Amino acid sequence: MNDDINGMHPIIGTWRLETFEGIGRSGERQLPLGPNPVAMLVYDAAGHVCGQGMRSDRPRFATDSPGAGTPEEIRAAFVGYMGYFGSYTLDDERGVVVHTLEGSLFPNWIGTQQSREFEIVDDRLTLRSPPVTIGDDRFLVVAVWRRIGGIHRL
Image 1 (cartoon, rainbow, N blue to C red):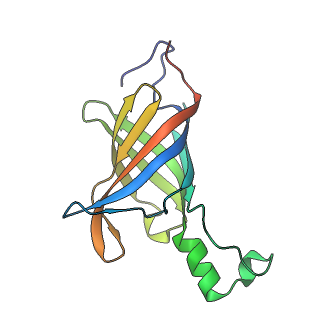
Image 2: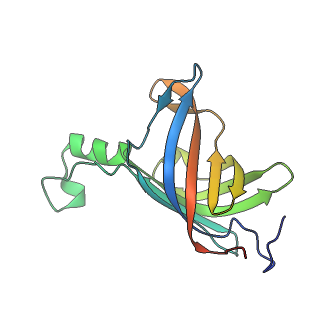
């Protein structure tokens, strides 16, 4: 593990999403969370990770009761949001962070390990996933994050 001047890994901190896109097999690009996604990712020094992200244009429900939305409202809310939490491990030699998920909005991810290539340059963190299914196709997902809290290098 590469440590910064404080003996902590530079991934530790709070990150705000700048870009989130899927790159298909033929190079086509999709925006799974729309053109202006809102997201935050937090890594703590104890090895915990929490990530939340959403489309900024998700429609509001007609009711103020979360459980009383129409099937269409519930579908749009689910498809337009992603969130998970758990623990993480780092492999600096390979440039990989592995999220071991304890909870996730997508139930199929609970108990799984989600591996991401990572690169940190200045206050930017880039995460690249292995190919994932989005709709009817497979995409490499690339997320670029900007540090908003935590470790800062001198």
